[in-house]
Image 1 (tube, rainbow, N blue to C red):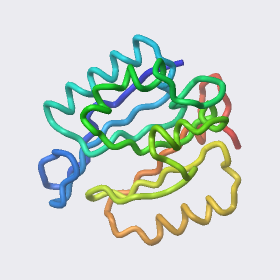
Image 2: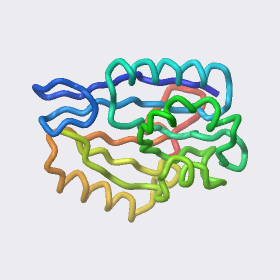
Image 3: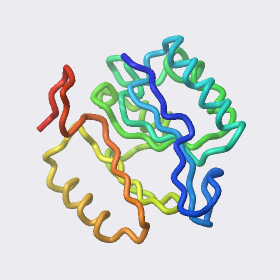
Image 4: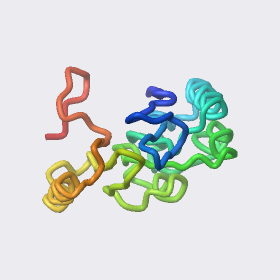
Length: 174
C-alpha cells in the first residue's frame, strides 16, 4: 500500500493558479492508493494541508484505493483522523473508485462520489473520472467518448485507478 500525492498540481493557461479560477486556471492535488491509515498517509495529508494553506486548491482528485479495508468503508483510522486537516479546510473531494473501494460505500459516502464514472469542469479542464474496475463497460466507453467530444475546455484529463499499460506487478485489467 502506497500513500502518495502530487501536491499542488497546477494547471494554468495564462493566469495565476489559486484554487478554481474563472480566469483560466485551476489548482488541485492528486492522491492515490492512500486509504490505509498509516503514518505515511497522515504525513502526505499534512503536506497537502500545508500546501493548501500556502496556496489554496479547488479539490483533491483521488485515483482510487481510497479505503483499504476489505469492505471499502471509511473509518476513523483510514479517513477521519489522517485526513482531518483537509476535512477542516473543507477541501472538495473528486474520487475515482479503486479495486479496494468497490465492496463498500466509503468512496460514495465520505468522498461524495456516488457514481462510478462522471465528469466535471474545473477552470480550463474537463476532468473525466472513470471506473477502472469495469474497463469493458460499453456504457462507460460511450460516456467517455461523448465527454471528450463535447468538451469545450481546452484541457482534458481522464483519471482512473488501474493502469491501461504497466510494467508493474499488477497487469492491466484489459
